[in-house]
Amino acid sequence: MLDQDDPETVRAGTPAYLLLIDSLIGESPDDGRLLRAGARLYGAYATALVTDPERGRRLTGHSLKLARRALCIDLPDLCRQLDAPFDRFQPLLEQVSSGTLPSLYGMAVSWAGWIQVRSDDWNALAQLPRVEAMLQRVVDLEPDYDRGRAQLYLGVLRTQLPPALGGKPELGRHHFELAIRYSGGRDLMAKVEYARRYARLVFDRTLHDRLLNEVLAASPEEPGLTLSNVLAREQARRLLDEEYF
Image (cartoon, rainbow, N blue to C red):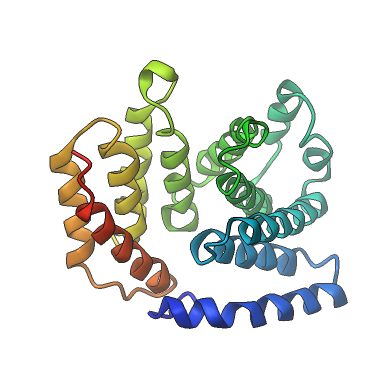
């Protein structure tokens, strides 16, 4: 599915895969690999291909439930403290090793997607520091994890606000550059988010337009990234058409 170059085909066909993976999970409810796969599929579908807000909230909610179940299998102590005060939650991240990174990363990505479709809910936004801390632990252990996607998520999180309100745009810029480097420049969404989140925040039109034009000039075909790259090119065109500057 990730290698498809037609988003509409994927949008129409994904629900069948969701039903299939739910069935497989029902047969093997403690299979962490299946739980992580289901969480990722539900989350990616909801945040990238679903436009109805209510459906997005339902689907990301299911993604988060599956991710949490996988986390509870691999990291039960951390699982029990997910909703505890931050000073009890954060130290447990230091116990995470490379062997349990898939479940930690899967939880962070699903949680980020859950928050994304609830961006008008301050209670949801208040959970972002936990997601950021989890992703930071991932890149501390493996800086190039998921071909740099963990760096991309951190770049987005750290450019949510301008410096005057506590944002860290220069740190975000560093994460975006690492995301591009670790994907060999083939993850076009990293450049789109770099332009959208950082270049617009600091009003750097030259960087903004260069990044987006690079996306449009690049071939979207890349194993595991083709669908994301096609969507990135669509977004790049829209961003260039907007009169932001």
